[in-house]
Amino acid sequence: MNDLAAPSAYGVLTEPTTLTIRRLLPGPIERVWAYLTDSELRRQWLAAGDMEMKLGAPFELVWRNDELTDPPGERPSGFPDEHRMQSRITELDAPRKLTIAWGGGGDVSFQLEPKGSDVLLTVTHRRLGDRAAMLMFGAGWHMHLDILSARVTGTASEPFWDGWSRLKTEYDQRMPA
Image (cartoon, rainbow, N blue to C red; front, side, top):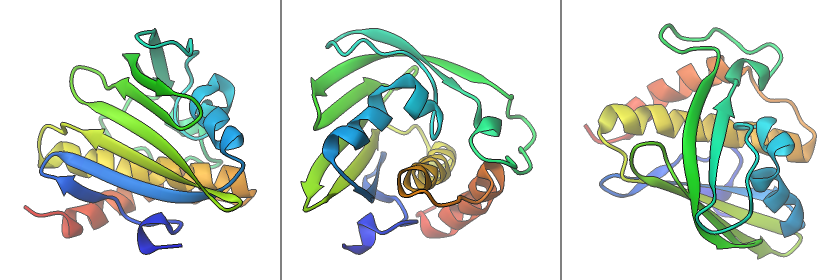
């Protein structure tokens, strides 16, 4: 396992507005794919929302970050208890790649690659608007993927909001100004 795929590995800017973050998860690939595409499983680490597995299919993601960990931690001011985002599938190669349009701009790709009995998950978030977005999404993807790792390994995760706040500070120190 390399440093980028280690549990709790930091995301890196692979282009000026592109964040890439990796996790090595226990397989098989179909199980990890289900955590990306099945609303009930995805709700446990990211956001709910039924997806029709069809190129161009629209769907809605619904975040309830207070429900991801018990306790949820201290939610920062300005964050609602629920967030909804319209999206659509822009690339689909089951069970290896899923790319979705991200809100008003950018896209997020999830790539799965078998590594023995494990699966390397690479998340790439493109066209992040500015440094503030990079910090918010860097901390967000990092914490969400830590929770996914905890779910698939049967371990505990730190409270979502406490981890997100800590990671936002750490990403602020790690990312170029």
